[in-house]
Image (cartoon, rainbow, N blue to C red; front, side, top):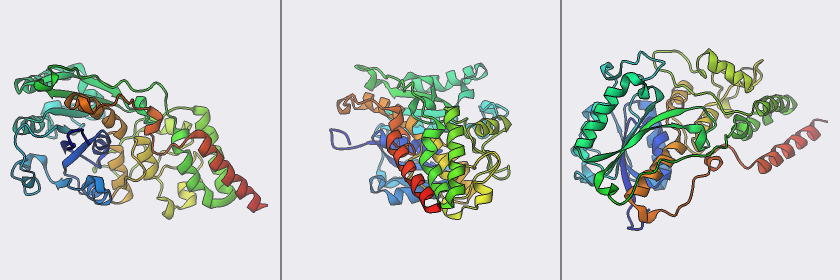
Length: 388
């Protein structure tokens, strides 16, 4: 909430399961609408909006963003928006047109939604614009396209703040996940201030730190064997002492979910995790399938979400594969929060307290090391005593 008594407002397109939305919300923005085409992701957004009172009023608009008029759509018309009133237009437009894992067709790819983002910017004239994409869009082959995007927004009186490559691991996310982010802000707000990109933190949050609590929760019900699995995983992950490889969500054209290509699976194996599938949730655990595997336990969807930087209270809708894909395709909330705070500092400098984001505080699954070690140790001691 700002000192003026009203929150900063935002509309987000291609919202997915809410990674960027969660981060921007934590940065002080209140979403008027989240636009998304995937039915499972939309249900995820609806469920979480309904469960959290501070999201009240946020409209989840399911459908093709190309067909949504921000002034006349039945779910948006009630806001009575006028050009220039919205604080932030944000979106993680589809990445396949620019991903090195795809054909990198750029503007020739029918999934490219940058043109629609530019149309919405011209219609809404938001005070700030934030667009997220994969690192591949920064490749030299796309320089002319990036320049045209910026030029069109400059013509609309926006100041170019930069295309920045931000590494998620610098913001407490236990994962390698570089993202390209474009920020442009209405020139009126840049006359007496300067946009400062967040700098992050050098401390890396490891997979062992991030997953220790939830891995113990999964192993504890299985007695001495579960403790042995937990100890072996923790020893392996601790000795590796690194963040995870980049999670990938895949596409609907492929089969079940797993943790990525061969190189990613090998990296997960070095962390004591079997990457050849996704485990069932805790209450549906099949021990021999999910935990007692030669290369170590598989991850649950919740654990994948922790690796992505989601808070544990954010729940995902759909079957296991649909939920994992939502997680794997998401934008890490802590990164969105950091950039959102930087934008808010320009739009409402009077609200800034100078507080800095601490990377490790942003990891939802990683409690304090001393606290967690004591908890696990106590439970383990009790388990051993009970088994004698």
